[in-house]
Length: 117
Image 1: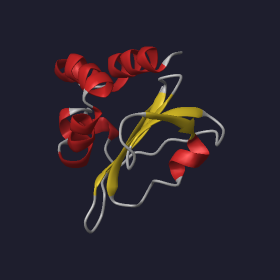
Image 2: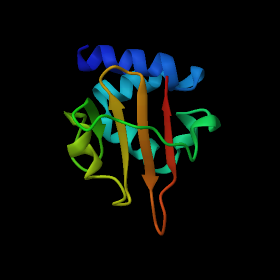
Image 3: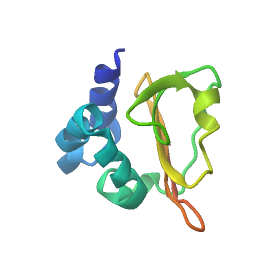
Image 4: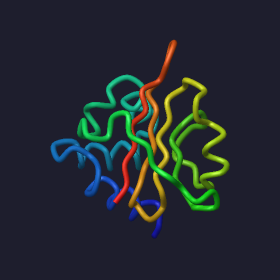
């Protein structure tokens, strides 16, 4: 899948219904704004069922990452994982759009949200 296709499929699978169009728009056009939501208002994005969950990734799985660097970056889970636990807010989406991992901005601790299908 292309990054745009991944974003669309991911939103349809995981993002709150009332926020899906905004999620896709911000992911593609305003990633800084989406990152701010992940950091401070993640409950707008995802249903509560994903809070405090975990998910397993193959370390070579291709992912989209919205985190410390500006915009969405394509990388592997192994590289994306290096950004976890730093407290800066993070969203990792598997390129298959079947799983994700997110952290809010944390001080002293981040909340973790994750899910898979």
